[in-house]
Image (tube, rainbow, N blue to C red; front, side, top):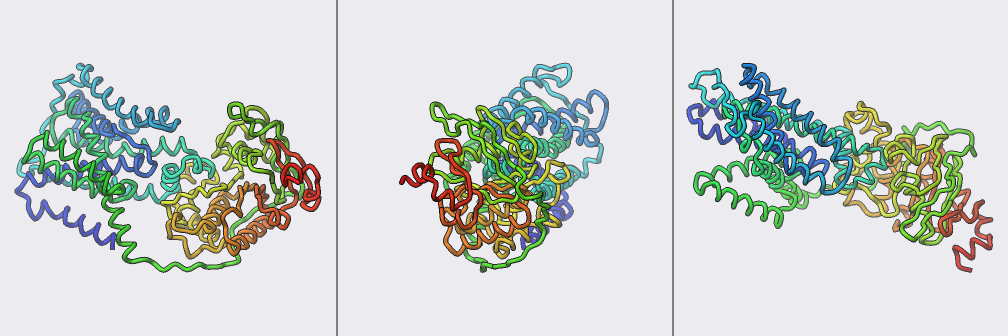
Amino acid sequence: MRRAVVLGCLAVLAAYPVVNPWQPYPQAVLLLAFLLAIQATGWNIISGYAGYASLGHGMFLGLGSYTAGILSVNFGMNPLWVAPIGGVTAVLMALGIGSVVLRARGHAFVIITIAMLLAAQILATNARGLTGGSDGLALELPFWSRDYQNIPFYYLFLGLLVAAVAFSGWLRRTKLGTGLVAIREDEGKAASIGVNTTRFKVTAYAASAFFIGVAGGVYAYFLTFVNPTGAFSILGSVTIVLAALVGGRGTLYGPVAGAFLVQFLSEAATVYGGTQSRVLIFGLVLVLVVLFLPKGILPTVQAWWARRHPEPVAYTEQQVARGLAHTPRPPGEPLLAVRGLSRSFGGLTAVDDASMVVREGTITALIGPNGSGKTTLFNLVTGGLQPDKGEIWFDGRRIDRLPPWTRGHLGLGRTYQVTRLFKEMTVRENVVAPLPDGRWRTMLADAVRGHEAERAKELLDLVGLGGMAHQKAGSLSYGQQKLVELAQVLMLEPKLILLDEPAGGVNPSLLDRLVEVIRDVNARGVTFLVVEHNIPLVSELCDPVIVFSAGSPLAEGPPDRIRRDPQVLDAYLGV
């Protein structure tokens, strides 16, 4: 149904100049809507998918315009033929900015995007020899007959819009796209499942700029004039953001629908009220969207439709799955070794000179009272925290200086005490999001078809949730989310999985299923280190058991011996 609506709208837009060729004004309004939709679609890649809001994306339109204008005026090139070079210029600028700014989290990126837009305007104003300064650049008139008026530009912008949306849709279906959404939902969790967050963000920022830069070159030819205030307008950047928010950021067609609505409102305000009226209307629309449509028009309509037409969901129990190939080493060989590890938070020492070994093929328990440092140890091992001192060795390699995603690529996975699934993604998207390696080929692989989708189905069948692949992860019960998180980690093809309180908050029926899955996966060669307070479960599932107290191991041995150890009874059980 959605595809039919999109094709129908595209057919109407493509036929309009043919049916009504002698009215250039409606054509101009529509082609400006196409231009805004191209920009909003590009903005959506970094700010909708990845969640990093840019308030200076209009800079890329200006860069494309000036690239085409300078090459046209100084070298006699037609702006249309050099418009793709404007896209390349925008990409190079985005790579330069993103590689510096996107290494950090927070609001610095938002501020710097605005600063770069204003800096580009100042640079264009002062570089008179190249840009013409505040007088701007006058380009040649279009080479076609005036009888065609805006029709060629109309189809050029429509074609660019189709290409931009198709590119955005393809990107969203790749591992890169699911990784970007994972970054938006929970950047720390995304890093822990092998997503190289820095590379993903910089790539997305560069990808978001290309079609905007190309459109800038075509737009310069349409206007036959480029000047600093018009090319690098802060209002233009705000309009891009407004269009995406109105339609629904993070969706494929939301920015396009929002761009048309905003452009038509802008044109009506300009015709009937002037520029100041347009700014007032934009502000009012933004307030209304934030208050009443925080997710945008299309997501709100989709949510309403889903409530009116709920899909039946059945729990499926499938016992056997294939694809968890893993060749175990001889039992007992050290896989994880922690040596003299310490971590303090101010005056509190959470992990204190801890040393321990997890041997391959075991299901090792890590027990201890609350506050003994177990979860902090997990965070140190997986890279969520950096140690003050000590070493961490995994599979014969020192890893305490490696980023979290590299540790994931080496075969180290973990689940969390409170599940950290990407709630707005489907169950299948959650499972295909991890990256088992850092190759570009893997990053650009199709995440919803082929090998990735087949493996995700096998893993969901393994945990008994194959029938829920298309449900939003946030709609599942807490126990089901625990199972999905385990399937997600298994996508990394791990050698060692760190389970942080897997039984917490899980009802007994699902807990039995979880234990069954852990045993099944362990039989295939995957080692487990389990933090758990459920002592009967530990006794049934784990051997050996390591007792943690005051930030360091207190005792280690089989469950029966640990239960009788006087030091353990005193420190952990309080008797």
